[in-house]
Image (cartoon, rainbow over all chains, first blue to last red; front, side, top):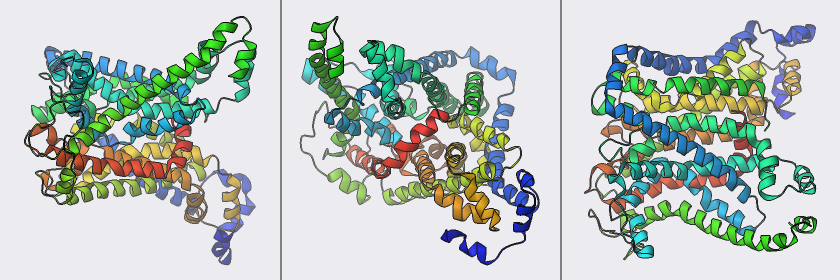
Length: 305
Length: 295
C-alpha cells in the first residue's frame, strides 16, 4: 500500500504501545483521545449552537400557556389543524401506497417501462420552488394550462382552483405527491430488487400470482421498510413549507394554511413571533413518538428490509 | 410469465386472456404517468417560451403560439425585471450550495470517523443526537433561527443560510457514513496503526479514499438540500443578498413581472440538479436504498 509508506519512514512512539497492549485498544487515551475530541468538536459545536440553542429558544418563546389559549381561540388555527391533518394524511399515505404499487410496475421487463422511469423521476430532480410556482401557474384562473386542457379536450369550463378551499387543498396535496412520489418509488424499487428470485418462484409453485402474490409475499417482506418510510415521510410532510406557500399561497383567504406556513404567517406577516413558534410547536407531540419509534428501529436493525 | 400460464391449470382461459389485458393496462398506466409527470414541467417551458412580456398572455394556450427564446435571452442578459442581478443571484445560490456541501462533508466525516473508527466512548450519544435532529423538520425552527442569527451577528448574511443548511444536512451525513463505514474492515485501520499512523493519517489516507462513494452521496444530498431550500433563504436574507431560489417567489406577488423571463430563469436554476443527478446516478441508486431503509 503506497499510502502507508510515508508513515513507515518515520515510526512514531505510539507503535510500541499498540503492540504491547492489544486488549487496551478499546480505551482511548492521550493523543488519540485528544484527536477524537478534536474530530467530534465541530459537529458538537454545530449541534449546540444551531440545534440545542434554537430549540431551547423556541421552547422558551412558546412556553406561555396564554399563547395556546390565544391559538385555540383563533378559528384560523383550528382550520389549519384540519388542513395539516388532511395534507399529511393524504400526502403521505396516498403517495407511499402509489409508490409501492408503481415500484412493481417499473420492475416489469419492458424497454419502454425502463425508459419511462427517466421522465417519471424528473419531478423529484427539479428544484422545489420552481416546480411549485409552475404548479401554481398551471392551475391559476382560466389562464392556466389545466383549464385550457379541460376546455380543449372535454369542453369543460374548468373551475377557478384557488377560489375553493377543497380544490386548493387538493392542489397542494397533488403537487406534494407529484414532487415526492418518484423518490419513494425509487426506494421501493431498490427494496424489491433485493427480494430473492426464488421467493417468487416458490410462491408461483404455490399458486400465488398477481394480487395474491403482492398481498401474501411482496407486502409482508416490505412491511417493515414501508412503515419506516411512512414515518420518515410523515416527519418531512409535517415540516413542508414550500408546497403550500407557493402552490395555493394559503388561498382562498388564508383557509389552506398548514402549521409550517401558519407559523410563518403569524411570525412574519402579523409580527407575532411567539404565537408563530407556539403554532409550530403544537406539532411536537406528534413528532416525538415518531422520532422515538425511528430511533428504536435504527438502533436494532442494520441494513435490512 | 410463461411459467404462470402453464401452471395455471384451473383457470386456463383466464390466463390466456390475462397477458394481453396486463399489457394494455401497462400502456395506459404508462401514458397516464408520463402526462402526470411532465405536465407541470411542460408548463414551465410553455410560459418560458412565450414571447410577450408582462401580461397574462397564455390564456388557456396548450402550446406557445409563437415560441421564442426571448425569455431566456432577457434572463441571461439581466434585462428583465427582478432579474437585473440574475448572475449575482445565481452565484449566491452556488456559493451557498458549495459551502454547505463542503462543510457537511468535512464535519460529518470527521465526526463519524471518530465515532465509528476510533471507538470513542459514549459514541451512541452522538449518533442519537444526529437521529433526533433528523427528526426535527427544519421549517419548525425558522423563527428562533431568525432570532439567533441576529445574536450571532449573521443577520442578512449568506453564512446564516449556510449554517442552517449544514445543521440539517449533517445528521443525514453521519447516519449514511456510519452505515457505509461498517463495510470497511477494521483490519485496515489496525494495520496502519501498527505501522504507527496517527488518527489524522488514518482519516486522510484510509478512511476518506475508501469512503468516496458515500461521501459523494452526502455531498450531493447537502448540495440539493441547499439548492431546494426556499424558507431559510427567504427569511434570513434581504433583497441585497437574494438568491435565485427566492426570486421565483416574486412571480406570485407581482403580476407585472416578466413571466417568461422569470420562468426561463427558473428552468436555468432547475437544470443543474437534474444534470448532476444523472451524472452521479450510479452512486445515488446504490446508497439511497441503503440509507433510507435504515434511517
